Image 1 (tube, rainbow, N blue to C red):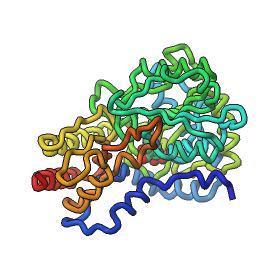
Image 2: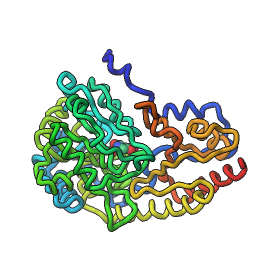
Image 3: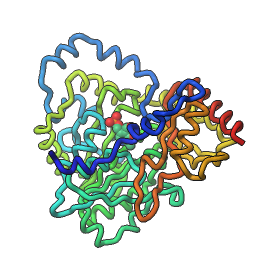
Length: 405
Ligand SMILES: Cc1ncc(COP(=O)(O)O)c(C=O)c1O
């Protein structure tokens, strides 16, 4: 058996299941734990998926790893409009992937060179796939602590040259999960400069890039900044995005990777053997999804309303701030009589028992590094359910906190 499998950590939702297994909540369970979009999949895409000719074609043919030119052109148009001045050549800079998760994982298998560069930098807290990807690729991990003290944003300048000589991959998450912080153009510039100086590929997970608060201020993307810096071929930069959050299609398994053509070509070769080509009917529907922005604007409006509803109810008893992007809140836990302060596991159990609400302990999304676990003392709240449920959850939380004091 691959010995690196032993290094993998239990997945946060498996740990959450274990944490809450013995509890009988006083109210019917309602989950704010999972980051799975629950808004309705766009009708025009559901209809498109039902077209017989599309399905017959999709069912009847092996798809190519590089995808159809139609899909790659739609993605490159999306990038040109959303991440200007970046321009992607559909033949050189892009590949379709089956959601960002598999691609964020498999890219490490394709690009890692543990003998030469045995370390991967990943943010801490993180999306756990980065950690598993690096470990299974035979890399050790440098956990880059991001905390509420540095606004969940660790400056790359803090990394020393000796460490950087060992680093073969840098994972970034922008906007970030679990906290929704957005890296500015300046932050991204610093990361790109570091990557150029030390010749380290950046794997930038942008799957929340289209879920943001201010219509006039979308989060900047890595390719935008690379192009502004004159890297029109995106040297050492790769971005990963998908339709899961943008278009409420988490089950379609459709996304893309874009950037440096040398890395894209290596990844294409790897994927040919891995067998991760996207089904043709998925590609057809995905093409339509990337071509339409109206449903994405509507989607953002729904999240805006839910944040407003949730925060207007909860904030008076449990202060927290809406991040400028993503559908998460990552507040410090409130002080509850009888519970140890900062114990996010104990608070998660308490909230489930007294209000039936599931949230995710922050310490399940991070590791202890340099003596601290930066996610500890926080919980992640995902506002993915319908507004009525989000409102009901907020009322239950407030009532439970009020009754505890
Ligand atoms: C930060 C982050 N990256 C990637 C993913 C995977 O998304 P998908 O594979 O659906 O694109 C998720 C899913 O929750 C996520 O939170």
